[in-house]
Figure 1 (cartoon, rainbow, N blue to C red):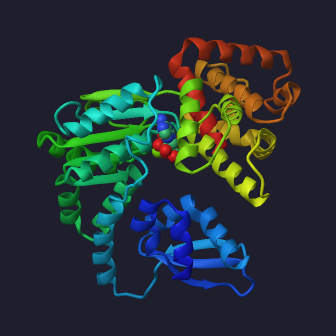
Figure 2 (cartoon, rainbow, N blue to C red):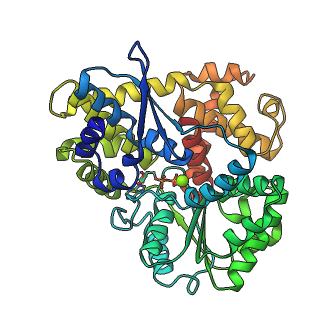
Amino acid sequence: KEFLTIIKKEANPTDYKRYLKQLIYKKITSDDKLAVFEVSNRYLASWIKSKYKPLIQHCFEIYDGTKPDIEIKLAGEKKSKKEIISEKAKKEETESTILNPSYTFDSFVVGSSNQMAYNASVAVSEKPGILYNPLFIYGGTGLGKTHLLQSIGNDAIEKGKTVIYVTIEQFMNDFTFSIKNKNMEHFRSKYRKCDVLLIDDIQFLSGKEQTQEEFFHTFNELHNAKKQIVMTSDRLPSQIAGLVDRLKSRFEWGLTADIQIPGLETKIAIIEKKSELNGIHLSREIVNYIATNLDNSIREIEGVLIKLNASASLLNQEINLELAQNLLKEQIKEKKENIKLPDIISLVANELNIKPSDIKSKKRTATVANARRIVIYLARELTHNSMPDIAKFLGMKDHSSISKNIQKTNELMETDENFKLIIQNLKNKIIH
Ligand code: ADP
Ligand code: MG
């Protein structure tokens, strides 16, 4: 109880009221290294962990000077199979609609990079099922797709609509679980009787035939009943490999809206908004520094703000430019040290649907050459390897072709939006 009082003081009030209050403190190990909490469902557990772990640790510090690692687990008790199934079904229902209360239209900064997706989302939440159905939002990682999707959800819930928000992976798990337990009726009535269905990261439907089949029926049923469907993806429907054509075409029935990498001004506005929301004070100089030096994802920018705030409070000093510079330098260095050439190869090969060994081979087909070029570019951007190192690794005799490849990639990125998006996506996937 005492502990919750401290958290309450420090956390966002809505988060506290809806979620953090549910934390049950179990124990701390005798060496003070690990503190264990329980909550009633695993999404809540991982959400609290990802968002509030540093704060909870900080609370321990305030409370008794320890700084244990934090574990938040599912309240576990032995129950009969039947009980487990019925509880799971019930839980899935609430879990799937757990929305992050801070993802709202108000907290979303609009700029030219996301204007269209934002407008479409607002329109859809004002007139669900009528204007754009489905709405398909696509763009690189960490650029605000989930934020917009959940804003639609939060808005619709306020208007009294039944909303289901799930990642396609949750949908799939739910589906397989229902088949296994012969509980399809429950599954169908749940997904086919909502007003607004929000599906996140639909690209992972790729290759999952049975789930595609089921989703096809869910889609049709909802669409016929004029219920709103909104999906997000890191790529266009036409570029999702292993997606059946009838779904591809349905995904394009309504509106597809993209989110691009934000320009400098939008980044600045986002940093200002985020620091204001988190009670962090940053000078104009620092805001500019962060905005110009981080270009990948807003998620990354947010992470830096949190770290910056934490280190300033640990060092008991104001946030100044030097602190920001050191932090970013550390972060960039650390990242580069962690990224290895084979990882880049396997990710690129996987994303472009070729064999990793092809990239190191002498093959010169267009697909392989393109993949190799991307690998070279990413290796240069994201690791400390020199051009000769990279050439050697890829079994290329001449390292002058490395710089030619990089030049070509830069040209392509300037002229081909789609290519740029692919590169950006890969980059984010490697970094995170
Ligand atoms: P995605 O789903 O595209 O990978 P998220 O929606 O999870 O990205 O966004 C990552 C983080 O960046 C979130 O915390 C989100 O609030 C924030 N964010 C992204 N775009 C914006 C924006 N335009 N305004 C405010 N916050 C944003
Ligand atoms: Mg997302």
